[in-house]
Image (cartoon, helix red, strand yellow):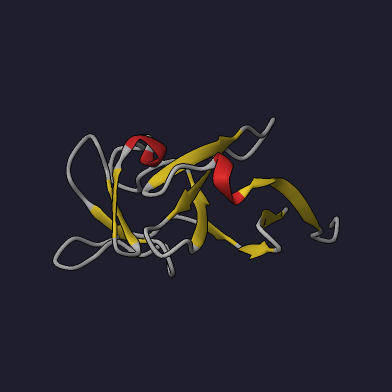
Length: 105
C-alpha cells in the first residue's frame, strides 16, 4: 500500500466561502474540498451515499453540506449523514497552512 502524503491543492482564496473545489482522481472517485464561512476546509468523496449525487454542487451551511439531489445533510467533519437519514461518505484530511489548502492523498 502506498503511504499517504500531503499535497498542496490551492490558495484558500481560490475556494469561495461556502463553496467547493473538485479534485479529479483516476480511480476511487473525485474529492470535493469545501470551504466554510469560518474558513475551515473539509474534504469528502464527491458522492452522496444515498444516490451518488455530486456533493460539490450542494449547499454548504455551518460544517455541513446538503446534497443537491435529495436533500440529505452530510456532516463534513465526520462524513456521516445527519439523522434521521443514515449513511456515510469517505472523508479525507485537509488543512489550511499559511493561506494554502493541503490535502492528504
